[in-house]
Amino acid sequence: MRVWLAAMVAVVLGAVAIGPLAAEDYPTRPITLIVPFPAGGATDTLARFLGERLREALGQPVVIENVGGAAGSLGVGRAVRAAADGYTLSIGTSTTHMLTGGLYALPFDLLRDLEPVILIGNEPLLIVGRKDLPADDLKQLIAWLKAHPDKASVGIAGVGATGHLAGISFQKETGTNFQFVPYRGNGPAMQDLLSGQIDAMMEPASNFKSLVAAGSIKTFAVTSKARSPSWPNIPTADEAGLPGFSASLWYGLWVPKGTSKDIIAKLNASMMQALASPQVKQRFAELGIQVSSLTQQSPDSLRAWQKEEAERWWPIIKASGIKVE
Image 1 (cartoon, rainbow, N blue to C red):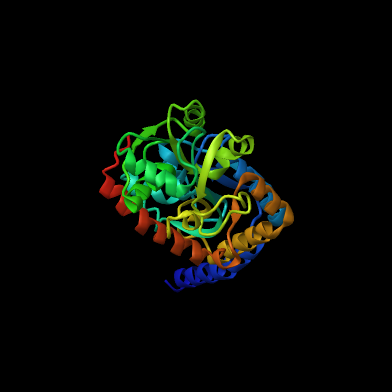
Image 2: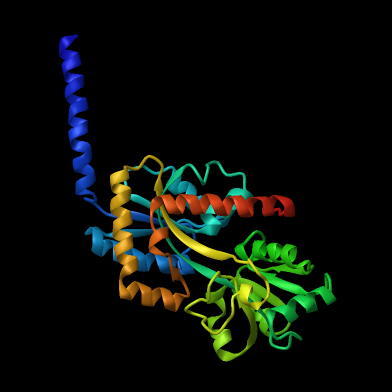
């Protein structure tokens, strides 16, 4: 009995001694970064760019694993079930790591089953209309929508997507009613906007970069609280006559629940270093993404923001009766 107890004490003490050392030495092998979308999309592009920055900071390869499907919930579920050892990271957006919690009956809890690492940045939405729409600013657009209840059409990238929910919130704030036209992504919707088949869209701003540059569509407002560095000449919704209206697509990084706080701190520090570099800031500007402020870059800040966003959008989803297949 004494021999057994001595052996158990030795094991426990050994684990205590090895634990901090393991966290200090982390990482010692390649890291997997799960992207909850197919290759080639905006989140995948961002993940590959940041994965290279993490490789430079941590000294280990970062392998991208694309796990698409069910609005990103398959990829997030894969991360939830992974070992909490710091070798599986989960990158995603407000859609995959917040909105899906209100849209689907998920087999995991988005707010509890992942540990936040850092809020990477955000991208405002842009309110735009077809070139010949009889409105030249946001106030005129709202007036036109009120004058044509249930006749205007607004394209969305999918039922329950960021633009759809922002549009529902817009209707509530302005007292307007219009028809949502769902598409399989923003590409087809923008084609119909250009051809005049739909009247307007309200989607992440980077989708419209080339169309705005070409003057092919009308722009009414960005939905950020301050003017976007990528769109300095476009007023915020607040400036354009809709006080307090804001919405964004934001990006974050998580690890499985139970991951060591020391490992999370190391990942956070590496990401903060990356986000502070001029190369990352330039690339983000090209992508239309605003780097999160220093006060937003702690794990606790991401946890609080994720919860705040869920408390805002989940009731809107429930009240609207949105059904997703």
